[in-house]
Length: 109
Image (tube, rainbow, N blue to C red; front, side, top):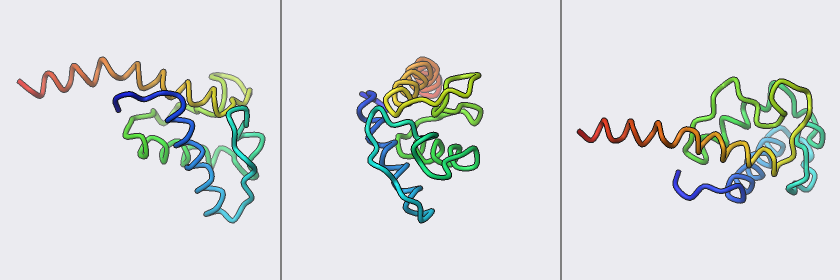
């Protein structure tokens, strides 16, 4: 997705999280950049965050690997804020961009 930035990702992430909490019949506190979903959202656990990541990836039209948890610092139990999660997604997309351009160029031949 061209022109992806952390603000766009964060806004989409907030929509996804609100959707999940609503569909689950759970409360959703106000979600701001400093909110840590793993701590702030009721029942937001390892059964739910992969669904949220999949929904976000679909909404943004990007690929986020199944083994990536954008809500926690890698190889730790430290919860990330929405701002940190958004920056992580932007970094993941930026890493994929050269490979996608190469694949598109190869397909164009």
